[in-house]
Length: 187
Image (cartoon, rainbow, N blue to C red):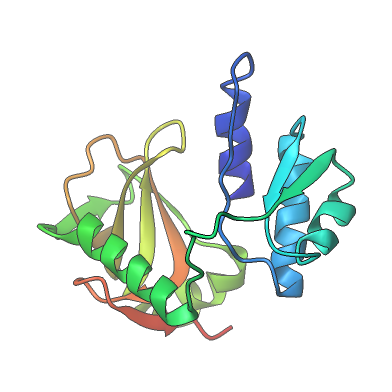
């Protein structure tokens, strides 16, 4: 994620770039993620929308010029359940009208995170239902999909048309083809 954001912002060097991040801030992993994102993108100014000192660990840890602004009263906070519903609706929107598509490993490269490489070697069937990103030659996202199977030099993916796909990047989230979250890969 950080690499993608860095690449996108680097392409907009001479213009104003605003990066609106997610609301994940409380966990140690969230704090480190935000600090790393700020370090990689090197912003001129970080504006944190938050209450009280909740953003202090991120802003202090980043050492970037920053300021905090309290959100407007009209802004509603969302529960984990609300955020999950929003994600599922997004998956459904991207997957609606999809179908099974077959890619050969001669046409596309399969990118599996190192922490999941044990699955591709010993339990390839456990890769099924993982979310995938279908990337073009510049490694930009063309479409998302659901991995159905990896077998004999082919990759079956449920997705909408994804012309120009050169890489299929496997993620950790398990999804049904109708966009329901099924959990994460157990590492």
